[in-house]
Structures are given as C-alpha cells and as structure tokens.
Amino acid sequence: MTTTFKAPAAESGAVAKAAVWFDERTSVSGAVKEFGRKIFPDHWSFMLGEIALYSFIAILLSGTFLTFFFDPSMAHVEYEGSYVPLQGMGMSAAMASTLDISFDVRGGLLMRQVHHWSALLFVASIMLHMARVYFTGAFRKPRELNWVIGLVLWIIAMLEGFSGYSLPDDLLSGNGLRIVDGMIKGVPVLGTWISFWLFGGEFPGDAIVGRLYSLHIMLLPAVLIVFLALHLMLMVINKHTQWPGPGKVEENVVGNPVLPVFAGKAVGFMFLTLGLIFLIASTFQINPIWNYGPYDPSPVSAGTQPDWYIGFGDGMLRLIPPGWEIPIGTSYTVTFAILVPFLFMGLFVIGLFVYPFLESWITGDKREHHLLDRPRNAPFRTALGAAWISFYATMWAAASSDLIATHFHMAMEHVIHFLQFWLIIGTFIVYFVVHRACIALQKGDRNLALHGHESGRVIRLPHGEFQEVHVPLTEGEQFTMQYDNFVPATPYVDENGKKQGKLRATLSRWFFADRIEPVTKAEIEASKHHHGELH
Image 1 (cartoon, rainbow, N blue to C red):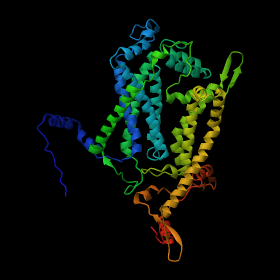
Image 2 (image 1 turned 30 degrees about the horizontal axis):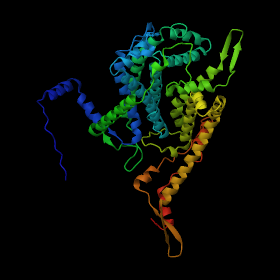
Image 3 (image 1 turned 180 degrees about the vertical axis):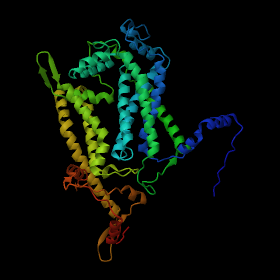
Image 4 (image 1 turned 60 degrees about the vertical axis):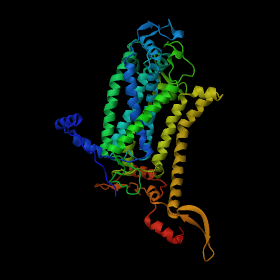
C-alpha cells in the first residue's frame, strides 16, 4: 500500500492571496482544473507538432531581439561598419543594419542564425506533422476543420519565411524577389499593375522592404498566432487521436493528464528543442550576406538557392519546356511558362485542402474517428500521399538542377528532362509501387495474425508430420493489426426510379481496390485448431 504526502497549502501567503483574488474576479480556476485533467497520449510521432510550436517560440524570441536593431529602409547609405571588405560600398539601410547586427551588435549574429534556423525547422516540422496526420487518417471527422487550419498555418509559415528572407536586401534575396516579380508580371493583364503596386514602381522600387517588414513582424505573425490558437483549441475540444492498443477505443483516450505529467514533459522537451536550435545556430553558418553583397539587378550569382521550402516554386519554373508562349498581336505575349507552374502548384495545394472531404464522400464514412490508421491499412490514401510527396520532391529537386548537373558532371538538359519525366510518369509509378507494397504488407500481417511469429523450432508429430512451432502474438500486436472493415459505397435508386451515385460507387471501388479483409476472432480460433495449437 502506498500513501501520498500532501503538502500543506500556504493559504496566508502572498501568492495564494493573489491567486484567490484573481480567481474571484475571473473564475479561471475551473478552466485550469478542466484543462489540467485533459489526457494526452504518448507517442514519438505526436512530438512533431510540438517541435513546430517550440521552434515558433524561438522565432518570436529571436525576432523580437532583431527588430530592435533592423532598419527597414531602402534609402541609399555608405557602409561604415566593422566588416572591412564592404566598407565604403553603397547599399540600402536595410543591408547596412543587417551587417551591423551581424558584426557590431553583441549576440546579433547568433540571434540572426537562431531566427533563420528556427524558421527552417518550423516549416519542416509543420510539413512532417501534416504528413503524419495524413498518413494515419487523423484528418477524418471531426478534425477536417483542423486539417484546413493546419494547411493555412503551413502557407502562412512559408510566406512569413519568404518575407523575412527578403528583408536584408542582399544579392541573394534580391534575386528571389526578382523571380517573384517575373512570376507576377506573367499574369495576363493584371500582372504589371500588381507588380507596380507591390514594389511601389518598377522593380526593385524603394518600398518593398518596408512593406515586407510590416507583413513580417505584424500582420503575418498576428494571423499565424490566431490560427495556431484555433488549431490548439480544436485539438483540445476534439480530443487527441491515439494509436490502437489494449484498452484504447474510439470513446476514450489513454495517456497522461496535462497537469502535471504532460506539461512537465512538454516544458523539458521545449528546452531541449531550443537548446538544439541554439547549438545548430552556434556551429553552422547560414545566409552569410556579407559574401553576397548588396542587391544589384545586374549580377546573378551562380549556384544560389532559395530557402528549401520555397524551392518547389522555383523548380516548377525550371521544368517548363521552352517556347510555351502565345503572341497576341504585335505588343502582347501570354506566357504559359508562368501560368502552368501556377496551375500545377495550385492543384497541389488545393488537393490537400479538399482531400478529407473527398475521401469522406467517396467512402461514405461519416463516423467519428479517434483511433489512427496504420498507413498500410489504407493503401489508396497512402499511395496517393506518396505520389503527392514525389510530385513535390521533384519540383523541389528541380530548384537545384544546376547544382545536380555540376556536382554529378551531367548535362543540364539531361537533368531537366529526367525531372520532367519523373514529375508526371514518376508520380504514377510511385503510386502503383506504394499501393502494391501496402497490399503486400497487409497480406503479411494477415498471415502473422493467423499463424503467429516463426520460432525456428520444428517438431515431429506422432503421426510423422513435421511442423514449426509458432509464437502467438501479444495483445498489443493483435490490436495493431485491427482495422475497419468498411465496405465501398454502392449506387442507389431515387424516388423517381433513377440510378444515382454511379461515379461515387466507381471511385469507392477504386479506393477499396484489392483490400485485404481484417482477420476475425473466428479465423484465429480456426487457425489454432487447424495447427493443433502448436504455440
């Protein structure tokens, strides 16, 4: 028998009195108590979302420090700071203040690197978190809205990163803005007007840095914080998903309460994440703008790359074949080299937004789901997700086509032609390979559930037959192999006698194509009897 020691409450202390005073006026203790009893399950994959949150905290802390010293002006100045190779060179005040932060402000370079590395980690962890949600089916009812909010956070994070990346007004960021300007001007009729409005005149103008600065430190962070709060609030309201296991059903959550267990672990993990970011920022250089110099429209550095999360847009521009232009009259040209990349990237992102609703409609599944799927148990979804990733990765790799060509001593045209092939044909190849791999894994699981693990020990039965002894699955292993036996949607006849839902039925059969039926308890018992229960 164990006893719990209860520390006496210091009811007369100043902190206790302040807490009572505050609670009497806000009644916050009830909300804290209710939230503190919320249960969160334990699994390493759930930490991906936490890493995004903690890296965002690092962004806020380091970004606040940088705003004290950064000058968001494109006014022309002469650099007079500590970096000797650039002394006396003309540049914008934004570039000069960034150099001052790097070389003259105590801890400035560290904070710049912390800010940049944490931004890269923020986007990466959001994408990995969304991939985990997708492949495990955690976007299904009642979490469709939270999936949409998560995608909005991903888009805002990329916009936030690009706007901050462009602020120093160095050669690298200026070339990135030049590409954006070219894409905007490729939009028929409106493109030129939008470019002039955005840059305050002909590129590069004299207003873009100040405008991006306002977006970067005020508007985008405010919107991001609002959507982040909504995301966390819906996670608490809908309760956290969990992996199948003993005692875990759709109606409960097995794990630790927020207070004190989960909160204590979360705080520790937060400091580990922040420590790792500071360690990386202290040892690995990133964005050395003093090597690039101030922005000048005339030179373009060879081998320069955008931040990795923007690469898919740059890569898609490189993959368009030459000559995709239609002249209209003698003074106007419509360039599909810009419009087609917009279309491909738009379809890629819109597909992510609508998929939860599309899957629900195709399968006819309107139930609430709080237990996660193993990716292999949803072959269509997993194969489609893998194809999506292949499509994105091909666009992303194309942004480094010049470096791939030079490092591997290949012709630039050969690299581009292969990536063009893989963007379309490779996406279908990945889909079919992953789909068949999921089916094969399901068959292996079914065989394992019926026969158990091979022990390597062979015995001879009284009638002379040799048979291997199998080790039965544990209770936890049996739970991991259980999944829904949901049937495809079928057409129906409406009140007018017309057959409806044929398209949905066709797509539903495709979604459930080659599915492997889950093992039933009766089949397991029959298997034991057939093998003489040699376990």
